[in-house]
Length: 398
View (cartoon, helix red, strand yellow):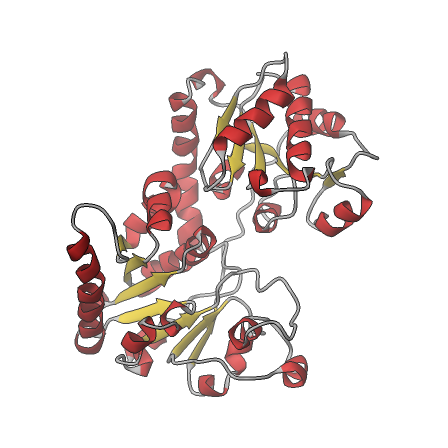
């Protein structure tokens, strides 16, 4: 197939983490296989969050294709907004069948009514890929659906002992981030083209993009927040997730403690980039910050920049819990501090990460000393482990 005609429609589920996982893969497909992409959103809040609030992923998407909202809208043109998704899907089906395009999804096309359109497509034009680079977190239980079970990673022996009802699968190409992905063992995947895209956070196309753009992204944020004087300094990045949803108070208490110790130890000597979840209650976050800063000073930014961008200039990273972001940062030579100050012994045990370099609790409250120690060390340059294995583009030759 001519490289100029290679195009893949990517159906994105309604989670930012799904976009964050698949974009590096798509960038590598673009670089090595000459593919362009149309990223399809059916949820407007996710589409808006990427388009308006996540400049890194938005720019990355625009370098290899475009993003479109194909769900039902609201407002002035309700009739058009109801017709457009159907028209778009019909056009997509035509292009896949007659212009040799492809569809890539993580399960969204298996759900009605989209399964109707999937059944109109030739098998070899359907790419089914694993949801997340980190695998499904929880062990199999009887309450899990068959699809959730097949998203686990198991050895063949473990799979044989626990397999149950088979989920729907129609795909000629399967892309997993680990060779143990259970969908590789599905009976209908026997003749499928299987690709293992291991080390998915480090494809060289994504790393080259981050290296080129990171400094400008951070400097622009400093400029926009009237902190231009903090350029050329290291930063501290703090990841807090959606703390407003925590009913126990453990996460907010941990966050307030972090702000107290940073404002006392660092003050306004270096900028603090605080990254809440994209759908967080920012007013609640600001109240926690005010409670922690009290009479001290602190230059901070509530940032939406990607963790890989922030890591490029970080002296340390601080987390109030466990997160998949810890796994991403751990491979970048940035010290990881988990502050679990707001939790009891059992809560600490449940949330502690093996990737953390330091874990702070009420019993071992030495966060201030850790911050001072890490700031006194000459910071080693960030380490990007570029993925060495070439991507298999042969599935595009059908």
